[in-house]
Structure formats: C-alpha cells, structure tokens
Amino acid sequence: MMSPETKQNVEARLKRVAGQVAGVQRMVDEDRYCVDVLLQISAARAALAKVSKLLLESHIQTCVQGAFSSDKPKERAAKIEELVRVFDKHCSC
Figure (cartoon, rainbow, N blue to C red):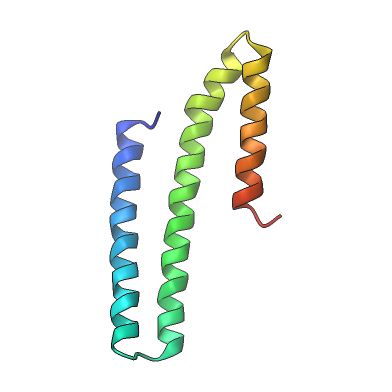
C-alpha cells in the first residue's frame, strides 16, 4: 500500500500527464507540426515512466519488504516472481 505522500505525488503526476495528453490531442486537432507533437508525446511518456518508477519503489518498500520479512518462503517466492513479471513488462532489457 502506498504511503499518503507517495499517493499524493502519484496523483499529481497523473493529473499532469492527463494535461499533457489533452495538450497532444489539441495539437493534433490544430494540425500542429508533427515534430512538436512527437516531442510532447515523448514528454508524456517520460512522465508516465516516472510514475511507474515511483509505484515500483513504493511496492518494493512496502509489499516486497513485508514479504521478505515474513517467515513464509512461498510468499517470498511469489513476490520474486511478481517482480520478475513487472520488470519484464516495464524494462527494455
């Protein structure tokens, strides 16, 4: 579970991303220069990547740390598998 500070930070960043995406839509509607639109898309993607990083950090500090503090090997193994799946989806390794 996210801390209240992390949740507030994530929510603020998501609102910013929503504004960026709305701006991209306006740019397309206004037939703006393609490179300018692409730059705004890149900025929105970077902002979403930061949100993902914050969420992953929070998850590791709370849920994963809790599982590793547990005396239950199956719970630890499940968290490791979960992290591998998350890294597989979010990393271009």
